[in-house]
Amino acid sequence: MKQDFKIGPLEAKIASALQRDASISVGELAERANSSTATCWRRIRAMEEAGVLSPPVRLVDPAKVGRGMDAFCQVRMKSQDARARALFQKAMEAEPAIVEVYSISGDWDYLLHLVVRDIADLEQVLMGRVHELDCVSSASTLFVLRRVKHTTVIPVDSD
Image: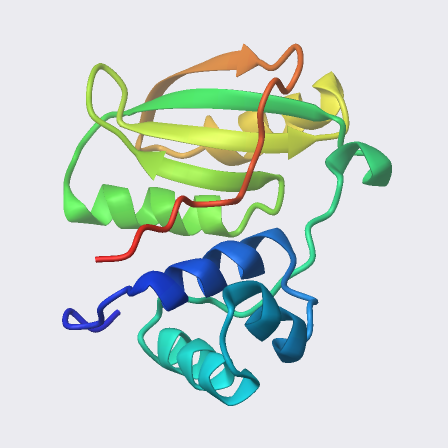
């Protein structure tokens, strides 16, 4: 993202609306943002070029596609050297059931978010993809009982 890109009130309205429904027309978006269609289109393009807006996607309900179980796994590495981190991160990128990976502070080095079918699927991913790595020292898994809040909407404020 460009360092000098400024989020004004119009950009904030556009980004907020698109996060909730990326399928709306530019005309409808302009109406919601109280702007002209041409201005709205130019602002969308500028935010895309600056990296503020990513390509639009459609979100899938995990339970509706047979992946109704969420789990979080904390991972401790044997070593923090660049080679070990790169190996671990590459392995995590290759596993589709691992939908988020965070490098974290504290007692653990990484936090993984997995969306799996069931316990057997979770075991296969953890034992076959995470614990098998030589760079992994230990891991601890937390099972999600229920999603209380889940959103992809990021608050957008103008500068």
